Length: 175
Image (tube, rainbow, N blue to C red; front, side, top):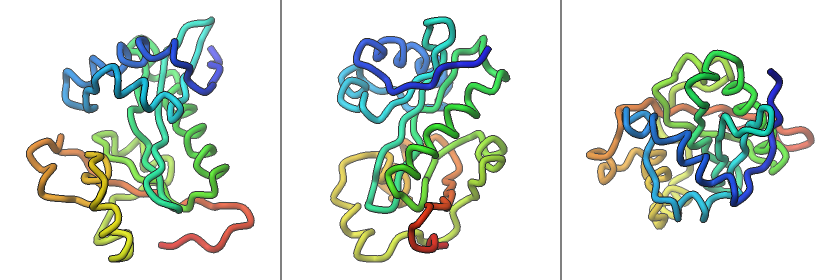
């Protein structure tokens, strides 16, 4: 089964929410209100097999050179088929197309993301001036990236990971 990976459409939002719900119930992914999915639909890609959406993932731009992979989920009966890997590769390709240098994720699936070149974050990953700008965001994903105490009660116990991208024609990646 080779899925079609495509940009999500507003009509996909109920299915995206359905894909995420079992993971949210197990506190692997954060649950969102339906309106949150509609507001962010342009960030999502979906995997479609025989006309059915079986996977989703989002790329949320955080700064001029930085984005987060969010809400990467596949339907339970398609786990282990490679759809998650294809979704992540498509999201990383989207980041390269946007000229981004780094991609962040917050995950329990450390091995999965390590196989794709992500590594646990050690220390600070943005300059102090960028850190102060990012503090202005109300987005919990950005707060998690910054490792802020205000999100600690909501933290799922995930590992913060980062991948430095090879951006063609761009400056050398910042380590």
